[in-house]
Length: 84
Image (tube, rainbow, N blue to C red; front, side, top):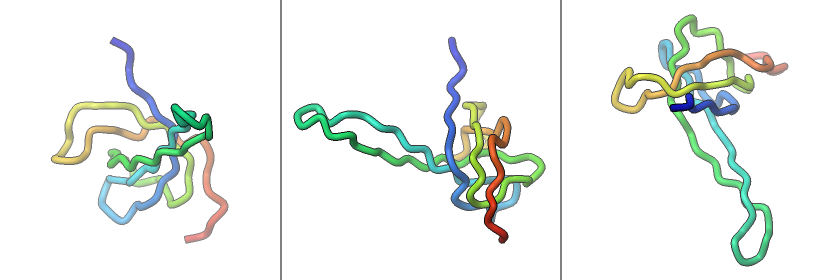
């Protein structure tokens, strides 16, 4: 079974060892063919707490670590230029 991976942007890093990642999926509207954007937020495990808001990250599906946390940060694709 293939491993599920998603690329998203970190929205929040206020929790300990956890980040909230926003993932956008684009698809055409079935009738009007306009490109629609669906946004979904995932709670992801960040062991070293090295992600900041605005970073683009790769998350992979993992074992359940808490009630809502089922993803883990694999790598940081690009760092944000925002200073927080």
